[in-house]
Length: 402
Ligand code: GDP
Image 1 (cartoon, helix red, strand yellow):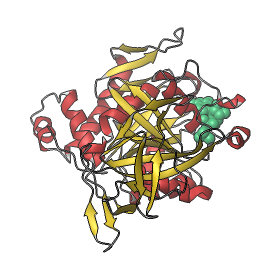
Image 2: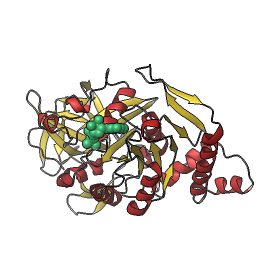
Image 3: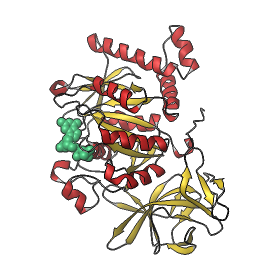
Image 4: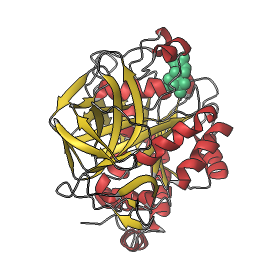
């Protein structure tokens, strides 16, 4: 499972990219185009009117054998409180940059907030087909303004109108896309000529960056030996989780190029809930800090990070579960308000439909229906579990290498 946010400056292509992700992960039957206001991530009518995403809803999709919960993260300074709330509950994020605009000032603001919450990230440099697109200039911009070394995992083949695909530097192959196929099959080709030269040069840089954090890679490198793709991936994953390196991907969401490697990147480089150390909450009575065990068999504890009102169902409470399991048709306690509440339904939200669930366990994100007296930031759990999560601390993720 991955709980991720997508962070971007307005117009960088967050909505278009999210739509592509939902399309590839099989949720949408067809892609809702942003320009005619059909984008399914845009929850409220107001957003559809304005063509931007302003609320933090969560959407679940599936890629290979992984469940990905996408927490919608507003990228605008005006919505800083909302950004903070969504940053609290996600474990990793994808930053989207325009290949033309690079790092915009507002992106820097949101990026710093994510630093505070120690959120590991990967980056997608979008709009490679646009006039003035320059992948390598944006890499420099990232290094300069965001103070983390960007490490390309894919590099573009061509730019502007000649942008035709990406090179995967880990598996050393060319990824292009079947333009006839609506499902967009990725075609993996061998590399040759100048493309191969460019790929070798950038793979060398990737190895060099990763070697600084991995002795095994360094050893093989110094011996002049081939570095297996799996080792390179594992070493980059570890450096990403420790926020030492930023894996970067090239593409154009409008042209359907380069988005699938980003979804693979979410799985390969961003943490699962179990790569994150247990959340630290505060005991109601003493205000002392306590670890919340990430165990589905322990007492349930969850944070409400978003409430949306549905005309028929009433308040939809988006929760991140940190411990235990919540079950439908049971009573639960609002810890801070000391009030009993009832879980009438548990829903998993997909981009255009909701699915009824019997339970929701630790690590997961979903919607609870039935609460009456509730606010964003409230902690819910079993009556005996007197811990509040709102001012939770964020330790750096650690990865246990198998
Ligand atoms: P958001 O504000 O970050 O959600 O950006 P949108 O996804 O709404 O995209 C803003 C505009 O850029 C829309 O007109 C999109 O069609 C366009 N756009 C998005 N991605 C690309 C791309 O890869 N190439 C080009 N040329 N245009 C794009």
